[in-house]
Image 1 (cartoon, rainbow, N blue to C red):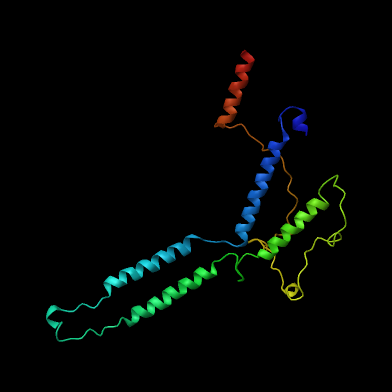
Image 2 (image 1 turned 90 degrees about the vertical axis):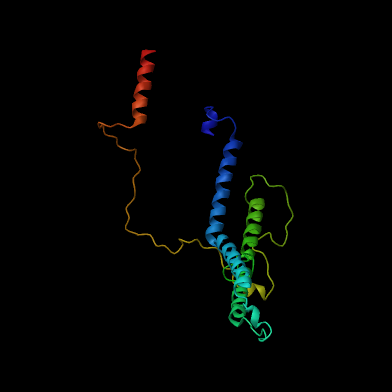
Length: 207
C-alpha cells in the first residue's frame, strides 16, 4: 500500500498476480520434488527394446546354403532370442504399469491426500478466509473441515508429501546472521557500475 500511495505502482492486482504466479511455481516444484518422474528413461528403454528385437528378426535368422535345401530340414528354433523377448518385453510392460503416477503403488502420487488437502483449503477459505462472509446455515461439516471416510478406508494411513531435504538436520550451534550492506573498498580496478555512476553524477553537476 505504501508503494501505491507514493505512486510507485498504479494498480495492486498486478502485484498480486506476480505473487500468485510465484506461489504456483513453488507448488509445482514441491510436487515434482515429491515424486520425480524421469520421462526420458521409459522413452529410451521402450525405443531400445523395440529396435533391438527389430534387428534380431533380420540378424538371427538361420542361413541355409543353397545345395543343402533338399537334404536338411529347417528345425531351427531361436530359443535364446525367444527367452530374451519374453523377459525384456515383460519387464518393459511391468515398468510401463509402474510409472503410472496416479496408481496405488508406494511411489505414486497420494491422490487421496491431494484431494483432502484441496477440500480442507477450500472450506477454510470459505469459512475463515473472508472478512465479511455471507450468512450461511450450519451443515454437518460446520465444526470441522476433515473429510469423512468409511470404516475400512479410514484405517488406511495417508502418506503425506515429504520433500527431498525433509530429513536434513541443520546445525543448532549456528549463531544469528546479521544482515548488512556490502562494505566496498576503493581499489585500482573499480566495478563498471561504480564508474558509470560517478560519470552520471558528474554530468548532472555540469548541467
